[in-house]
Image (cartoon, rainbow, N blue to C red; front, side):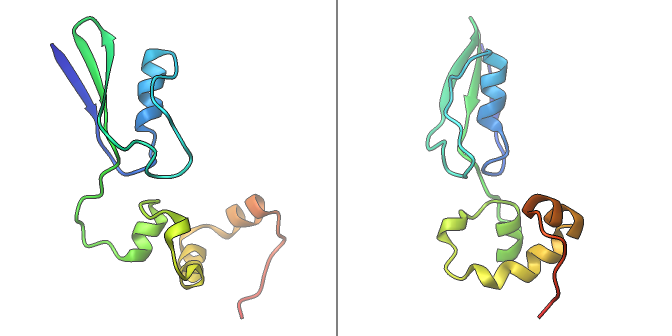
Length: 109
C-alpha cells in the first residue's frame, strides 16, 4: 500500500490537487482557509491512497503581517484590518492593485 499526503499552508490548493488527480470532486474546496477540517483518505488506485490534510502553519517566527499576507489568517477574524494596509501596499506591485481594483492611482495620506 502507498499513501501520499498533501501538506502545506492553508488555502494553497491541496484539496484541488486531490480532486484533479481523481478527475472528480472528492474533496470540498473553498476560497478561504479552513475548509478541510480533518484528514481525508481518498483511493486513487487499488493500493494507492491520497491524504488531504488541513493546512498547517509551522512555527517560523513570521510576523502577524506575514501570516496575513500568506493567507494563514482568515481575513474575517482580523479585528483592525487598517493596520495591514501599508504592509499590503508595500508587498504588492502597484500595477496589480490598480488592475485588480480598477483604480487609476492614489496618493498616500
